[in-house]
Length: 224
Image (cartoon, rainbow, N blue to C red; front, side, top):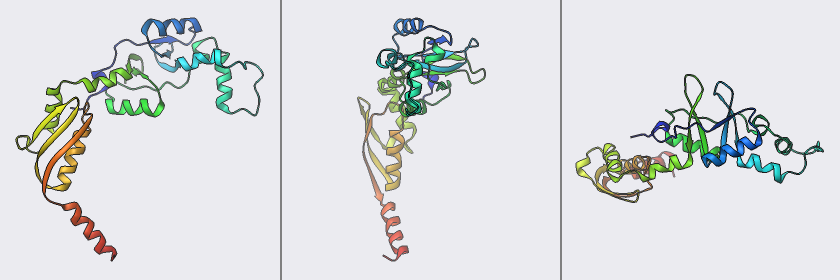
């Protein structure tokens, strides 16, 4: 089973309007216990995000007016944020969003690549914010019941009755036999991609090593 954002997302849209004050942003973060809030237009469409890092610039950056032309674009942006007093001035834009049908794996990759701890979830049709996906929501897949994990593992096996499966704290240990080595490796990778699997310990045996045959053919073709 491939999990999607809608399976774990929070149904509360943690957001503030563009004209929200610095104090209102801090209050929203404290109220919901989050490190960032989405900035929205009056029609609930996300336009950016204000994080704790953005707010900390108010204390960390003491240069507010005398900006040097030799500074990088990023440094200039930080100075502008440090002087900001509304969400529109403080936010990082554009907002990085996902939809309810985004796969959880893709959402996790997006969080890692963009180094964000939460993502606004938008309705695909209207573009309006309808919820929030937090890192802790994504990590909930590693608390899936063993029965669910085993069912997903068996679903990718060619003959489930021919394999023995043991799951302990998300680590799948599997034994059995297939005809080709490539089949054994492919099974391991398929199981590793199942949401909630921490690791795979494969003891699947094979009768024929087709990978070795392919490697020997490559050597013959190159004349080595």
